[in-house]
Image 1 (cartoon, one colour):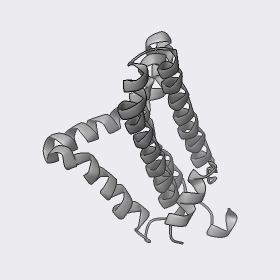
Image 2 (cartoon, helix red, strand yellow; image 1 turned 180 degrees about the vertical axis):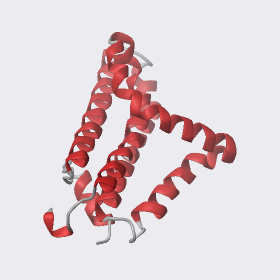
Image 3 (cartoon, helix red, strand yellow; image 1 turned 120 degrees about the horizontal axis):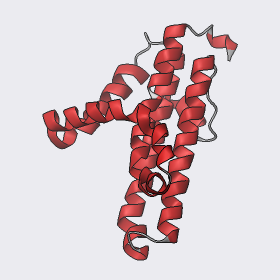
Image 4 (cartoon, one colour; image 1 turned 60 degrees about the vertical axis):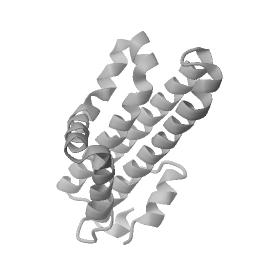
Length: 166
């Protein structure tokens, strides 16, 4: 996407760092796989600093803490035209990954887990697939950001492009 100009090093760094939020959101789905294969906890390391931010914001602002973090990311970065398009696009993409993971988490907690039980092959498989998919999307996007390319994830990227102004 060279028509948006060259991407500076600082934009690559910030474009990469925002995906730590998506990795933090994936921690919920990691329980079964990390218990069976502890080596997978290595992939969660970028999400732990974000956990500190979330914990602090929830302690400070109560249940509105995570909403406040979302609003800061959305209004402070995505809608800020003074920030480069590359950083805003990657921030919007990580917000969309987080929203998708939150919706899957709600569906699983309110529909699938009561129907199939808290553990079992079906639930464990779903948790593992969602975890591996979100980690793969996050790390793919992080690598693309380091290289200065726009990460193209089907459907999510289209939604991110539609939300980020030029």
